[in-house]
Image 1: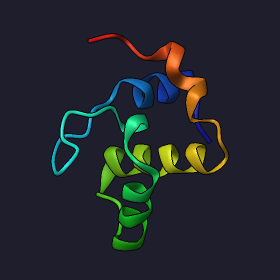
Image 2: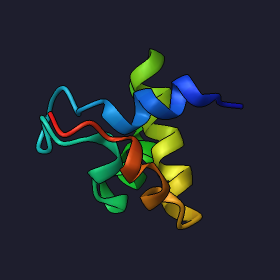
Image 3: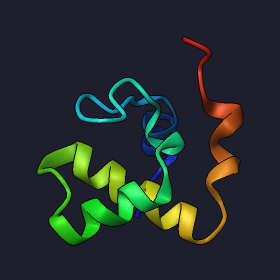
Length: 72
């Protein structure tokens, strides 16, 4: 399960590498997250946040985190 701190972290974490480096995790294309799901999400917190981002996108809940996102 996740809490408010996890949602805040997800809303404000940027992809640290790859094609979408610098983009907020919640702004990653669903297809990209699905590719990672098949390949295997990265170890640790980043992978957990990416898996949560995918789950929210699949359920159509990704826009709920928009108000939590900091502009910088």
